[in-house]
Length: 494
Ligand SMILES: Cc1cc2nc3c(=O)[nH]c(=O)nc-3n(C[C@H](O)[C@H](O)[C@H](O)COP(=O)(O)OP(=O)(O)OC[C@H]3O[C@@H](n4cnc5c(N)ncnc54)[C@H](O)[C@@H]3O)c2cc1C
Image (tube, rainbow, N blue to C red; front, side, top):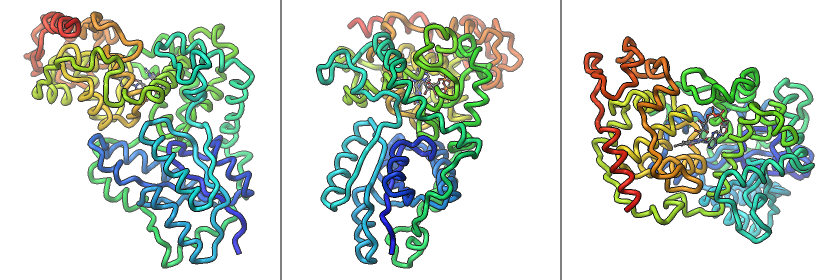
């Protein structure tokens, strides 16, 4: 006879410590919680599907499963959409006289597709007679909590006032509590004070029954996907993420000065972990001893917290205006007459535009699955304002290649650079890639790391529009900066 048990549906919260919904589930069923992850075949067939990101995701799931298993629990990974998986599982339970779960929990996701899916699942569970509860976990403040006024949907469209409100909330007693709540991650990382005897359910035995209606898909998907992986996949999961966080803590003071220099590793590279919830942003803030109460005094250190606020700002935009997924935030720019030259697009993707800083960024992306933020801004501006290619093409390519590819910040970053979004850079301000290169990579160290043809070229040649770089077997620029800038301004004006 099995006692009450609970099911926690993992999605973008792939960690145990500080996982709000998982913790609540544990409480309600005294630890007899089973984790479930449902692969969505639609997701695997998306045009912006990325084998590299998927590989990292699978590694994250494996790390999560190992962590849960170490504590006597398990993660069931099924190849089945959730609205099919839950009824199938419950049907099986009924056929074996196993009670249905007392509770199904999950943490909220803010993407349009996910919101629709979750509403459906709530209904499916209700029809099955199973209770469900959802929780805030992925963001410190959810989109409905940072509003201009009490009027529903009155959201901020500009970052500065949004961030002021966000920081005020962070400094409030509730904000402080939300960060403190995540402090347990430290002990968990140190393998102290863990919940080792919480899992008691004999689930593994049940899942081993011959007629169990699912096969574990983790290994199968890993095998299928591995042949398409083109980069080295970083270590994944909570422990890898926390280790990286602690290493970054030592560099935090220098963050403000170094974060714009792509050659020095001044940023945290935590985005890949925040994306899938191996780490929560509240855990990051807690570990770095940053909180809303000292943000003005903390000066440089708090530049970092401002970036976390940018992330939440873009989630808020996507939540309140889901149309941005496919359309310009500013409808005025929806019908820009992009040139969309396919040859230029290919040259941009390959990193063969003849603009060294752009090519270095695009090659960093292909080689590592990540690109420095400053360079993301440069290459995105270049694609839209120099090559006059639709920002959606670039956004889609980033989604295919980035390990941290995440709809809200990716869409926000692209629309910002293309000047079609909320709080964008004004369209008449066009980044000059030559000046950007000289300013942020004066010695050409970053360029040389990824554009090996130029490894012996002097920096003044690398960043000079008029120098001939053909002797290094490096292509001539595919367009002229000044001509394209004027064209772009005319295009936007019209
Ligand atoms: C065109 C474009 C596309 C982008 N696409 C993505 C994406 O798909 N996924 C993604 O996570 N970020 C995206 N960003 C934002 C930013 O470039 C990355 O978050 C950052 O480079 C990740 O590196 P990091 O973790 O070392 O950042 P850090 O500088 O260490 O910042 C810490 C965290 O703050 C958040 N953050 C930092 N900068 C931004 C920003 N400008 N906007 C929103 N959040 C930010 C990230 O979660 C990041 O991990 C994009 C930016 C641009 C301009």
